[in-house]
Image (cartoon, rainbow, N blue to C red; front, side, top):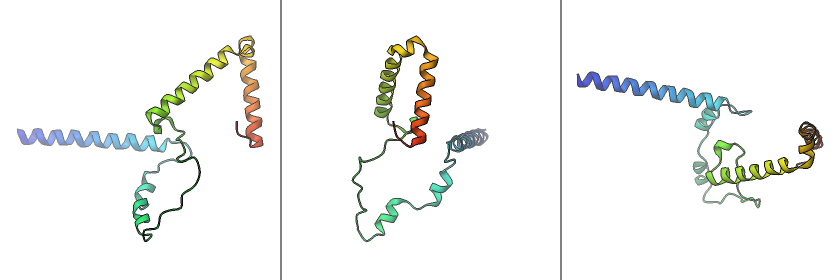
Length: 126
C-alpha cells in the first residue's frame, strides 16, 4: 500500500511539473517580438565561461548610466515597480487636473496621441 501511495504521489508530482513547464513555455512564447528564449539560453555558453577563457582580461566597460532598467513590469525589482507606480499616479493626477482634459477629455486624448505619433515618426523621444 505504501509503495502504491508513493507511486501515486510521484505520478501526481510529475503531472504538476509537466503543467508548470507547459505554462512557463506558453508564457515565454507570449512575450512580444522575442518569443521563447529558453532554447537559445540553453544553447549559448555562460558569460562567465567566456570571460575566464580570455586570459584574465577585464571586459571593456561602457561609460553609460549603468544597467538599463527593464521595461517589462514582471522583470522589474520591487523598488522599480514602486517608483514606476508612483510616477504613473502622479501623471494620472496631472491629467485629471488639466483644464483641457476636464473640458473635453476625448479631444485632449486624441490631440496627445496625434502629437505622440508625429514625434515617433520624426524619431524624437518624448
